[in-house]
Length: 209
Image (cartoon, rainbow, N blue to C red):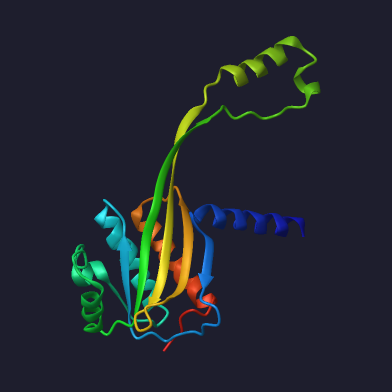
């Protein structure tokens, strides 16, 4: 029984350690019901990294499609600056031509880096083991005091995604997330897409055909 519990705990810790993105808050429009959208246009807003923007859109589109929800990437469909000088009427007309009836935004709210000092790893040893003799005490404490630590730089991404109904133009879903030290932009986009779509399905924001 004890071994099973330890094994389960280790597996849980491994899963947690491999997940770098988590939802900090999410909201669904009151009294709303799941909508079977025909096509969702995914638009990412992040500067200056267009490659990250493209990956975030692609993965979210892919995860929507894996749940039988058609979606397209704004970056692939229109390019990086198609809507920059367009008014609302022009935008609505543009997306209607592709059969889009919902818009999903991905916005990088903030990206922060923090440099932290990690001291030498200290393991407490019961005093009876080395306090009784000077040399045992001296060599143990010497290693703790004079072994240098090191610096690490942690990177955090703060994201927000909103789902708008293209017909009513109203917000139907909003979610905020935090990504901590992603391995690369590919893994960041992959985790993000899966997490957001799973939350929308769980909260019954979107329905399947």
